[in-house]
Length: 271
Image (cartoon, rainbow, N blue to C red; front, side):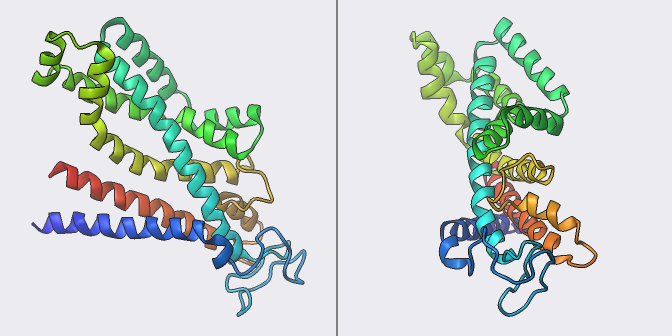
């Protein structure tokens, strides 16, 4: 009973954190006190300390850090959710086809998945972004393309189990074609685990986007990105630590929110 209440709390807290991020992203023009891309302070060339006018200070270009963090929620959520949608589309498709049909198809698809798993995750993403040139579209496409392997393996295992269930065997015996079996019988029963993986995986895509931005391969400036803000703030960490700490806490908050929500949903599904 205590564990059930704890999981319920995780789900509620995580959901509230994610909802707050979504609201901040939607109402960024209202919540942000200044234009995130425009210099609004006279401290150009030198970070400004936090004050009543600028609660989180200003960066080396005189831009309001609070406004950039608020607008950065839009970038992070857009990339995280869109990239996870691409990840799930690729991973679920490969996992379903592999687990449902088995045989040579399963062998080829899983060996391809093993090859992708053996490649360094971040280095592969960096290489793809460097080839495609950094942009919002290229970043979310690259993250989606390199993040699907674990999803495919989990979905394959679940699909293999589903193909031996009585309702699938009965539908197959009645002559139902493979696409109908997958769409009407297998996929709906995999929906709960797919939702859990999508929620938990979003935190990973947020971290990968932040890592790429930190390395200068994310969304190009002047668009505010939390990872790029951390990278720029490290140069002034001794004199202006708030430049790196503030966006770092924003990344931590977003990742923690999605993880708590995902584990809460997972615990409810397990019950």
